[in-house]
Image 1 (cartoon, rainbow, N blue to C red):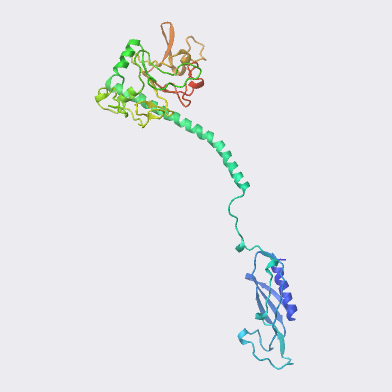
Image 2 (image 1 turned 30 degrees about the vertical axis):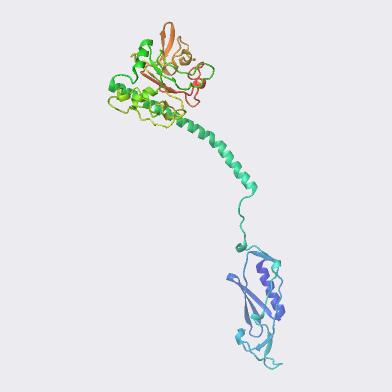
Length: 377
């Protein structure tokens, strides 16, 4: 039963108890008036509280009869009810029930309230909802993580290229200022004796990981070996390395102008840390040392000890003999064998994201494919 139907039913029950005729009308804001017609008639205001509910009401009317003069045009308030009754039998007196004497009881057990004021909102999530959310997050993570990994990898490659370019520019500026390459006298003598260029490799450093066999120990030709720390001491104008060891630039003998040609980050570490470590070695974003080759025989070509190998530098798709060089390297015949050189005074490269090289594959295959080079890219 709806609330509107219940209001009409309540009115009918009141009429049946007090013996009056009923005329009813509904007004706004939930106010219903019941018109009791007897003689001139009176209006009994009955306030109705409208709720979003459905219920079955049982009405009980408790009436205390009082007598009043029929000449009253409306019901009197409790303070104006006559304290004495007119004599019995008077035709002008009628039995009436004042509205304040009517009590309607609505058992709460029969009502099913759905009032907004009494709604209790649920807190927390169900197990199914949590599982659905976790599944969605897992799917999104599976889609995003590979993309983030690729983006991070590309960012490190770009950083390595920038660092390699900075080293090349620093070497050229030094050569322009001093008309010589930034290296020690030991490297100059070794190159002159071997009749080749000099490679600052992995001497006194861990070997590069090698796939397919072979040695990852990158060395230069001749008896004198060193790594790029010697070169960094000159370009950064270091009198001593951060670990306290003296450099070949003690008292700025290799850089009298005390110019800082390279802007490299210094890190408080000796191994596997990007940047220039305590030992003066410049490492790439993956922790491997940069391999640097300088033209020390003054032929305007650089011959790297790793990329001079025909197996690595030769292009396998080339049909010529000798094969054309990979990434612009040029073959050169020496004592009946071919080696490959770069038409330029500086070669710098990194082992790349996989930190691995392969001496049995061309430079564009396998572990060598992701090497970061200063030429041909």
